[in-house]
Amino acid sequence: MDSAGKRLRKVREAVGLTQADFATKLNIKVHQVKNIEYGTSRIQEEVFAEIGRLMPELLPWVVYGGKVSLEQLEQSKSDFCKLLVVRIGIGLVTDATFLEMQDGD
Image (cartoon, rainbow, N blue to C red):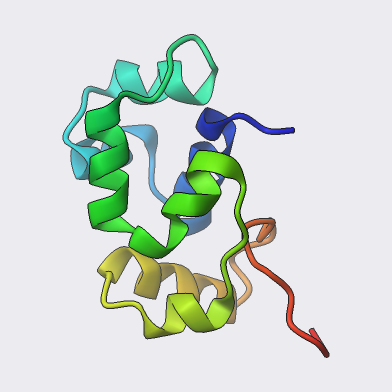
Protein backbone atom coordinates (compact mmCIF):
# COMPACT_ATOMS: atom_id res chain seq x y z
CA MET A 1 0.00 0.00 0.00
CA ASP A 2 1.19 3.49 -0.78
CA SER A 3 2.22 5.85 1.97
CA ALA A 4 0.61 9.25 2.49
CA GLY A 5 3.74 10.79 0.95
CA LYS A 6 3.41 8.71 -2.22
CA ARG A 7 -0.28 9.57 -2.46
CA LEU A 8 0.53 13.26 -2.03
CA ARG A 9 3.04 12.97 -4.88
CA LYS A 10 0.35 11.46 -7.12
CA VAL A 11 -1.92 14.40 -6.36
CA ARG A 12 0.87 16.89 -7.08
CA GLU A 13 1.67 15.21 -10.37
CA ALA A 14 -2.03 14.97 -11.30
CA VAL A 15 -2.43 18.75 -11.08
CA GLY A 16 0.85 19.31 -12.90
CA LEU A 17 2.80 21.15 -10.21
CA THR A 18 6.53 20.98 -9.61
CA GLN A 19 7.74 20.21 -6.12
CA ALA A 20 8.70 23.87 -5.75
CA ASP A 21 5.25 25.11 -6.78
CA PHE A 22 3.56 22.56 -4.55
CA ALA A 23 5.75 23.57 -1.61
CA THR A 24 4.67 27.17 -2.12
CA LYS A 25 1.00 26.15 -2.14
CA LEU A 26 1.49 24.16 1.09
CA ASN A 27 3.55 26.90 2.73
CA ILE A 28 6.51 24.59 3.29
CA LYS A 29 10.06 24.28 1.94
CA VAL A 30 10.85 22.30 -1.22
CA HIS A 31 13.07 19.89 0.70
CA GLN A 32 10.09 19.08 2.95
CA VAL A 33 8.00 18.11 -0.09
CA LYS A 34 10.86 15.94 -1.36
CA ASN A 35 11.31 14.27 2.02
CA ILE A 36 7.58 13.61 2.34
CA GLU A 37 7.28 12.21 -1.18
CA TYR A 38 10.32 9.94 -0.79
CA GLY A 39 9.31 8.76 2.65
CA THR A 40 12.25 10.16 4.59
CA SER A 41 9.94 12.32 6.67
CA ARG A 42 6.32 12.09 7.76
CA ILE A 43 3.65 14.60 6.94
CA GLN A 44 3.32 16.98 9.87
CA GLU A 45 -0.06 18.01 11.28
CA GLU A 46 0.30 21.55 9.89
CA VAL A 47 0.84 20.15 6.39
CA PHE A 48 -2.25 17.95 6.70
CA ALA A 49 -4.15 21.11 7.70
CA GLU A 50 -2.91 22.90 4.56
CA ILE A 51 -3.87 19.92 2.40
CA GLY A 52 -7.34 20.04 3.94
CA ARG A 53 -7.59 23.74 3.20
CA LEU A 54 -6.29 23.43 -0.37
CA MET A 55 -8.02 20.25 -1.41
CA PRO A 56 -10.54 19.12 1.20
CA GLU A 57 -12.08 16.43 -1.01
CA LEU A 58 -8.69 14.76 -1.49
CA LEU A 59 -7.60 14.80 2.16
CA PRO A 60 -9.10 11.37 3.01
CA TRP A 61 -7.27 9.81 0.07
CA VAL A 62 -3.96 11.41 1.01
CA VAL A 63 -4.31 10.42 4.67
CA TYR A 64 -5.54 6.83 4.38
CA GLY A 65 -6.31 5.97 0.77
CA GLY A 66 -10.05 6.67 1.00
CA LYS A 67 -11.65 7.02 -2.43
CA VAL A 68 -13.07 10.23 -3.79
CA SER A 69 -15.62 10.58 -6.58
CA LEU A 70 -15.29 12.75 -9.64
CA GLU A 71 -18.63 14.28 -8.65
CA GLN A 72 -17.14 15.39 -5.31
CA LEU A 73 -14.26 17.04 -7.15
CA GLU A 74 -16.61 18.69 -9.64
CA GLN A 75 -18.72 20.17 -6.83
CA SER A 76 -15.71 21.39 -4.86
CA LYS A 77 -15.14 25.08 -4.24
CA SER A 78 -11.40 24.43 -4.17
CA ASP A 79 -9.46 25.84 -7.14
CA PHE A 80 -7.04 22.97 -6.70
CA CYS A 81 -9.83 20.40 -7.15
CA LYS A 82 -11.30 22.34 -10.07
CA LEU A 83 -7.91 22.25 -11.80
CA LEU A 84 -7.73 18.52 -11.20
CA VAL A 85 -11.18 18.01 -12.76
CA VAL A 86 -10.13 19.94 -15.87
CA ARG A 87 -6.91 17.94 -16.19
CA ILE A 88 -8.85 14.68 -15.81
CA GLY A 89 -11.41 15.85 -18.38
CA ILE A 90 -8.83 16.62 -21.05
CA GLY A 91 -6.87 13.43 -20.43
CA LEU A 92 -3.77 14.87 -18.76
CA VAL A 93 -4.24 12.72 -15.65
CA THR A 94 -3.22 9.16 -16.40
CA ASP A 95 -3.08 7.88 -12.81
CA ALA A 96 -6.42 8.61 -11.17
CA THR A 97 -6.15 5.93 -8.47
CA PHE A 98 -7.74 8.36 -6.02
CA LEU A 99 -11.01 8.31 -7.94
CA GLU A 100 -13.82 5.98 -7.02
CA MET A 101 -15.10 4.58 -10.29
CA GLN A 102 -18.81 4.86 -10.88
CA ASP A 103 -20.94 2.29 -12.74
CA GLY A 104 -20.26 2.64 -16.45
CA ASP A 105 -16.83 4.26 -16.01
